[in-house]
Length: 122
Image (tube, rainbow, N blue to C red):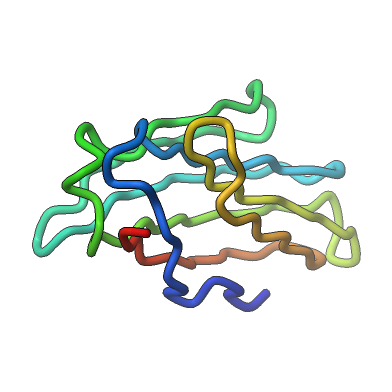
């Protein structure tokens, strides 16, 4: 599986509410994910979960005005039921209930994906 976002710029309102990230793993795949906020040498964990847990939206950072120029990275690992089993997952970035960007990934078998976006001011 290949990255889709590849560091794409995602515009946020630096005066608005904190943006959020949500990862939803579909089909019968067993998966896990972790998301990080990357700024300079700091990259705190902002969200993690598993496919057998309820889908959750996690806030990105603690201060919206400090986010432009930061990267948001996600790592998703999939363990399929067999080498040919298909899987899919969706990464959604929102702010104030509005979808900023959505990335839909699909593949088959076992896989690990690392992808990211760069947050910029609108």
